[in-house]
Image (cartoon, rainbow, N blue to C red):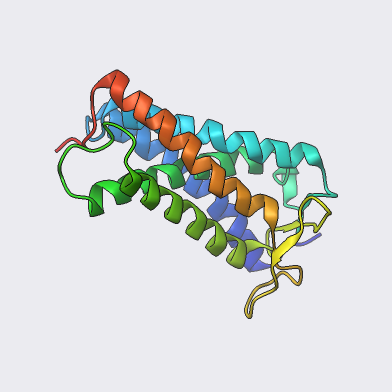
Length: 196
């Protein structure tokens, strides 16, 4: 099957952003732009994302399938690796937002509802946006008894199904797990702020 130009953009963009994220975090850490805790947190975020990305893959096409198969086998596990890296980047964008909007005083020293709130709102908000843009264009979640439609199709959405429960629930739970582990990393390495 021949991909449309926009589908090539989605495919190349998907892997390019993942590569840029990895290169950025390696560069930022080796050049002392970010603390060790942040570098490890990025990889932890990737691993957390891999939990659901690969679980969704193993649940098979009855749960989630590609809207259009990418060539060279890129629709399977390579796409899941890429999306796991994106997830790590999404978590770290939440960390950035906390540092940006909560001031320069010591951050991430203990559980803080403002920090968690920003991360949770960011996680849920970006998930809704990503589903709005890409569901039906890159992937399709099937409505099932345990994955019901919770948001009907919206104007401009490519999916005629709408948004289902499991992807949204993932981003309700995942920020809690990431934030808890991130606090442990910051405590372990005794670093909280970005390096100047």
